[in-house]
View 1 (tube, rainbow, N blue to C red):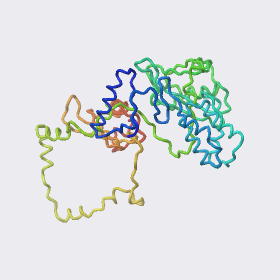
View 2: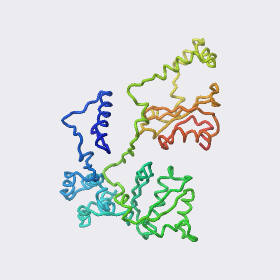
View 3: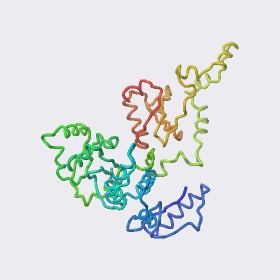
View 4: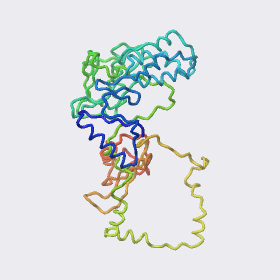
Length: 412
């Protein structure tokens, strides 16, 4: 944990907010150094940004560093520059277009040659939307306060063929790519998704009577989306303007970071107030339906010495691994929570609330588990339960592990 920023809309509430944060720190044996603290300030430098009541701006030292950056002499220096300014691209107008010559230098098998065009790209600063170079889009949701709040961002460069499209087709391609990219959120919605564009003619695109081959293909791709296209002048759509594709020095893109309220992290508390495991153990002896099951587990089965000896010496990995394969499988590591999950049913339980099973879903990154009452049914029923109990909280995983039973292996 490093810097902590405490924001209050009203000055009279700020003292209470500070006390609450300090109390949480103390309860977890964490301490703040007084000499590094600032209280009741209206301007603060946080994560390289200057935050004031008027808005967010760049730190003077960072501006100076960019302005004094010397011309790169090799590809690694170009990558270093792009990696630095990429964080501040929201303040650099037309960044995706301006930085195109620099991005091109970092492409594989491209000979490094610092041209006048590259030098101009180092100096320029303007603003653009999804123009002739790149797509920029923001997925937003209207909150209870009536304002649109960003959910996700998309930035993507056009390929060589798409760069030759006219303006209308480029704007339409931006809509198509955005809807497809956020398919898991937007496909099949009951209420229509509102798409804002600064190209007025696209408002009538969905209801056009004739399409060329490209538009017909796009129309088919978007058939499962319920959306409406509305015109908004370019001067009102400045948020997606500075979005651009990253071609910097990172070989592996950083995982998306999401802010989640503390309520979602109850399972990670250091001090667990209720020992749920102990409660379950104590209640087992009072459950008459489990008497037979518990009794059977206490029976000691006698095995002939010859069979027990064979069992102890058996090389289990010979059967667990395919022949002719590596004997020691590589350990698989996930990069972030709920990217990779495992799930299965606990079945044949006494019926309770018309349910006879428990669906257990495990996050393989942190070992956090979800347990949900279930009626072992078909794949569609399990999918509905998965959406209600797991997907709505953590999103769609990249990979899943199951016993490949018929419920999971059909159309789940």
